[in-house]
Image 1 (cartoon, rainbow, N blue to C red):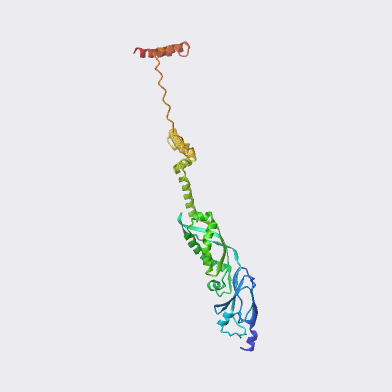
Image 2: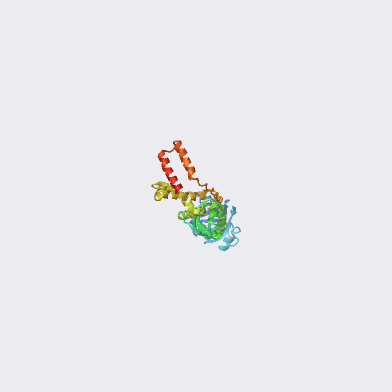
Length: 348
């Protein structure tokens, strides 16, 4: 190496990452035309991890603190480079910093419904939304499985990958949980509990730790929600006792009253004239009385008919008829006509 090229080289005495850009999870220290001085200082802040990578192979990992870089503190890198214990020259190595801070308040959702089995509705498609938080828990796995050798790897980039993992895991977890959709919708914490454990396991394969996971809402697509509403309505109508509603038929009869009143001719217009209108009204009244009135006691037997009055004699009737004439309550013509009829019956 010529003296000029040696002078042009720059040596690094201190390595550190100030995290000046929000949302960066992995950052590669710029090493172009730089070499790390033997005995240089490596600063790793709280909520950071530094990883030395030699030709794509992970070597030494450093947690928070101040570290002096020597062959003693870089045992794996020393082995990879075949250094001996007396090596004291500058060296090149890729250094990656990872932020291990918890990424809070991250939103998740299902842009497309996920299909799951349901014990009440057989197969349904569910949409859900909520919040979650996570962090880089294993820098080795995160580098190997996700971030790789890119100079910068951001929060948005990792979340694009995490969403796919979340959707597939949720579909599997909810489908095997045997928790009905109606129970999930009523208790979103229950749904979150069913998913969180499986999701944490899936995230850990990529070096990501799931800190929190909650469900803010769970719903069906509009067409399925409409079908569910119709089914619920039918259940309400058909499930009522005979004492209260007499089934869906009586409910329809009761519901038809305002519609019938709007027809031309009112209730009578539903049939042929007043007689048909009265019949319809009686049918509706019976339906409503069965729907809203308490069960009636068994009808009491009709009272015995009174004994027939003894037949009045013709003579008595003639006397009463004469009394009416004397009092002026009937005319002479009425008296004579009725008298003739009575005498005809008497004489035969």
